[in-house]
Length: 207
Image 1 (tube, rainbow, N blue to C red):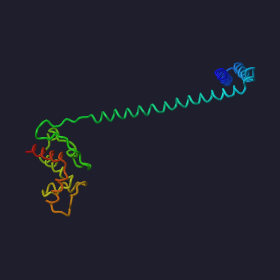
Image 2 (image 1 turned 30 degrees about the vertical axis):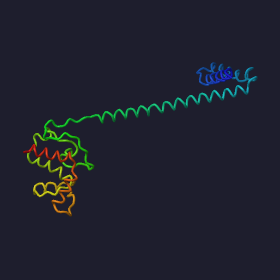
Image 3 (image 1 turned 180 degrees about the horizontal axis):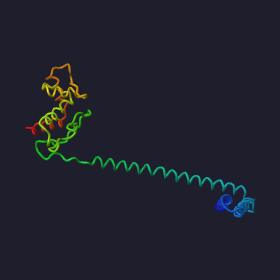
């Protein structure tokens, strides 16, 4: 069987060379060699075996190409998955340093489920730092603190804050049908610990 495969391989090689060789004489030479292999003494004696070997050789080549392509397609996806995992690990490993003073809370707190709005949306997603507050005017500090309440629909009695937040497109009173005190109790119950601590820290800083 090995001999049959060798003859089949020789036939394929000589046939290809008879087609792709640049010189006419060379092509004729290889064409004659391939014909001799096919119709010569060995070919006539083992014709059926020869054709079977030829088919087996083709099948082996096709199978080898298919396996190679399968391996090539599977490797990039594995690399991509590994890259995604490494990237996710890098992102999740980023640490944010909290404030260094006791008046500002550094304890972790769950983030609210809504999208924060306003000038200082991060006051609902991370602890404030002294760097965040430094250089702000009293009005800005009061506005930053009250903005935390406004996101949840606080009803303001102060005319200045009432006018300001009612001009913001994102501001809505939480329960317009309730009186102010009842509405604001619902707001306080909804606020996260992080937001409450940030509001207290801003108030302590502004004193």
